[in-house]
Figure (tube, rainbow, N blue to C red):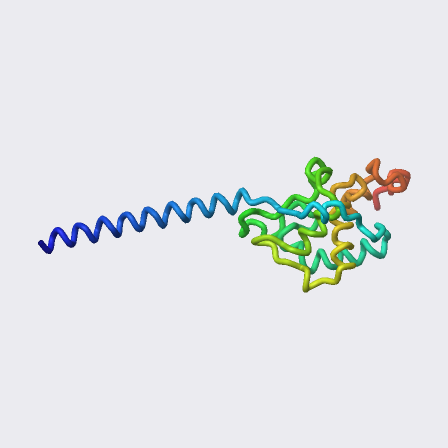
Length: 170
């Protein structure tokens, strides 16, 4: 009699564990396929700020302070903390993807966040979030190459291309 109760308890425990595993796997799958659900009205928002040097400079400082750890120095999603996150940080230099995202969507994503990315609604002002949207947009533009790449005479910086080569020092 005791062995029958023991066997029944084991079956219940096994069934409970299997159910827990199935629920966990289902939840994990759901979280990975979760997309940004941006309201239609927000998608249509236009950035009220212009990509002026002062706005981009302010945004670069914010990005370095709050975003570069995950998104990387140049927005490639390769920051030192990136490998610790699932889903991984977005590659903000992906021109094909960035063409499909509106300014309103970028602003919303910065504002609301999504695990593992935090919300910046209460941490940054509205103007700061719009400045970051300008910077994020600039990462996928051809002229947004890192400074050291621009100075090599690339076509995106004609002035650098015109610099005369320095003679080697003797």
